[in-house]
Length: 271
Figure (cartoon, one colour):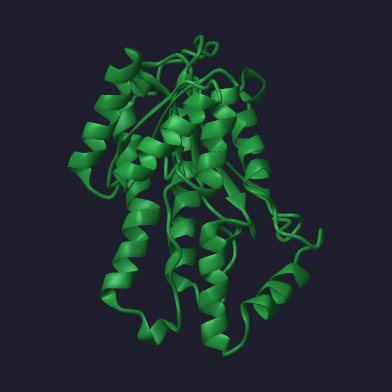
């Protein structure tokens, strides 16, 4: 017989600790800055130690409480060390987890290698599971009266993307994981949501345009024009606009939002 989680909803702790992955550029950096500006104590990670060190220094220079550690979030041991470091650094449990680390990847499906497929799935999906499980267990979120898990998915997690089967598959899975875990944790005071950006101007977006330009034998400017033509607002979203929704989801006012996949896409997707 299964037991239901104990109802223990509460208020956010003072200056909660927020762990943000993939946080040295693009959306992740904007999220780290937004959460820091809200008074949260931020612990960030990325693969490259020099980038983590520089980003933490830059954000501290803005008056924000930020520390970090380089980590490969697809590696279980590295994830364990990352969560332990976040808890030890601030002497408090992780109350907010933002699973932002991700990568693009695709091409004609018949030509996709095993290595590319597994890299995309490991980075975009398996890391979300590994981090979430670790934060629930050793990070302290599993026994907390309040918490937030926010997974950065994509509108590609709700519709297929041309020449993007690995990416779409991984992001669809993140949305499914989010909805299932959101229902599981709903009685506990920990909410779980996915934020689904559409086209956002980031270094990853530039790499995606380059990939399509090569596949279509055209220019990156033409690719961008085609993408923007699909967006009702007629422009890419900004990382700060995505971070704004993430920040709101960490507030007590967002306590009744859980198991959702929310778009930030300029109207690209209305689903």
